Amino acid sequence: MVEIKGIEKFSSRDFPGHISSTVFLGGCTFRCPYCHNADLVLRPAELQTIPVEIFLSYLDGRKGWLEGICLSGGEPLLHEDIEDLVGVIHDRGLLVKLDTNGSFPERLQKLLQEKLLDWVAMDVKAPLERYREVTRSNVDLEDIVRSADLIRNSGVRATFRTTVVPGLIGREDVVKIGEWLRGADCYLIQQFVPHTTIDPAYLEKKPYARAELDALVEAARPYFHEVRIEAP
Image (cartoon, rainbow, N blue to C red; front, top):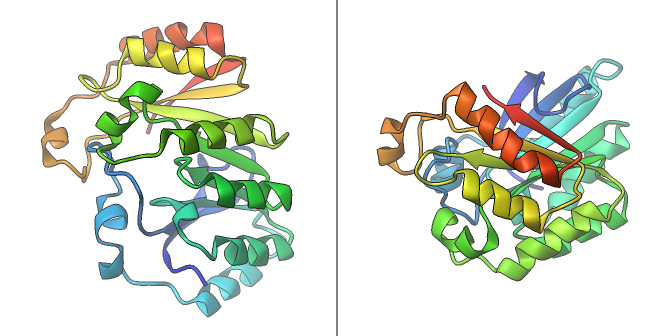
């Protein structure tokens, strides 16, 4: 079974419209310098693992109250046995939302085909031509494109989102992402938070001001049915 590294018992933002908890899984294929989950990405083995029995007891103890679970990370699909975890959640009548970076289209496709996902949020890190630069990884761009296409054609509720960082991701990038994903339902402009970043230099970066975020929203608006700001 997947090793669970943390549980946020009540999350009002990760699974909008539902009473939910967020489960954090360790490890990631990317090394985005601004990532605020540095320990989950770089040092998952050093974090305490929550036993499966404790997690199942947690779910059963909230029966009739809890509506959904958001699987986040790290990158949840990095784990080969992610289907087992999703299955035990679904077997308890709970909705499942998956946060993914799109690196594992085969596992994503299987979960979608078996109707185990109720919502998917894909982090779109950059325009395709800048993916390796921004993620600091040797990402397979075909996997990213395939994952985005799977999500768009799945019929499952979906959100694409981009963390915007001054000096790294700006207006031109948002427009290029819009041109790539034109017609998708929902796109979130996600505010960068300078907290426990993978690259310590990003702790000194100042996030975009609200007016600048609004301008990014307007730049993205022609390409999506809905564009919103997601800020802490």
